[in-house]
Length: 286
Image (tube, rainbow, N blue to C red; front, side):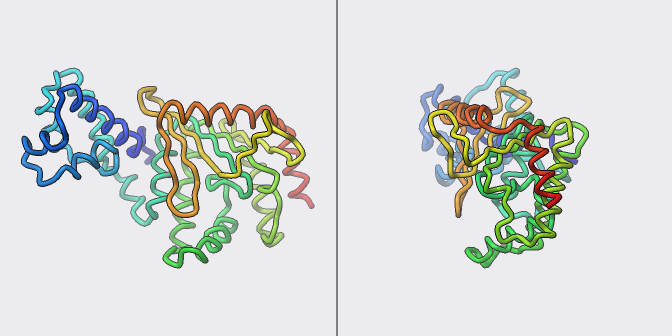
């Protein structure tokens, strides 16, 4: 079952709030760890940075040290439980690699998702055959990738668009993303028809940015990115930048605002959803 909240985002929020509480008490990492008998500051540092699934007992100990009053304490306990969730859906992510798991967690708890992909079809919109080709190509750089496991994981992620309460999803595609390249014709036609079908869903919008169109300021980002917002406005809006090895997660207001402004400029320049569907249908019929 889908998660009502995103564990990775809850970890980031919990860490930020615990760090703020520690600083309010004018305590260093070392002082807190000494009070709790923790062997080193790395454990607390990872919790504050949202880099580890927190143990609820550890969070309760920290709340005691910071003397957090009941209303705020209760709210933080709920966040901590979401951050450390071990529900069945989370367990089902077991075979996912770390990168796909991060995206799956963000998608599962999101209210809105916007993907910019200048050269390939976004993961949430890929057919199994197209995904297999893309993942197999990536394996040339990382031989440890289990292609079939990644294909199954990507298919699991697709369920977020089919659930009863899906996020509002927008895909912004560069013209190169809608060109077959070396993709076999049968796989490519199936992928294009799949895009047209998905574009018919009320919560899915697909927009094509032609290569001949110049967005405001001439800005056309070469790096794929994804923007996420969440039902709880206190959960940090997030941008994920896709890199060759380790993806970059941005959560500061200044960073996210800049990417949301950039997204607005791309949307201004892109074809309308109707024009995009017509273009995809023409290509699929060829």
